[in-house]
Length: 142
Image (cartoon, rainbow, N blue to C red; front, side):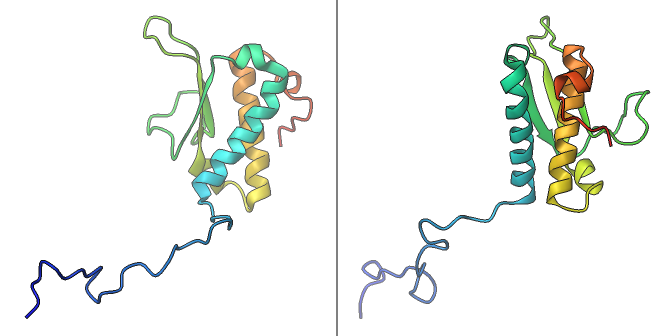
């Protein structure tokens, strides 16, 4: 009787993985969250070409939903928020976009990208004290 120590079974049925799940060179599908983050990065890259000095120390983040305590001036859930730098706490300026809130307002990928761009422009404008039309000449508030 062969010893169990010498047996090399890869899984319960002796098979193991049959091969890679995704062949090399094939693009993997991206999740909605990853596509949303790509849209944010694309919007930021467009603005950094023009406002690189002002955006040098700004951090951009994506969260699923905003905190449950909206600011008094916000009517409904926020699409994004800008936070000024806090030297005392050692925090740099940051802009946060709320993925699920933005996605709920859109019907497709192109609408998501357009709304992400508008929200990023609005938050950058608030942070640097410029009107959105100055920050991005292609800005459309609708």
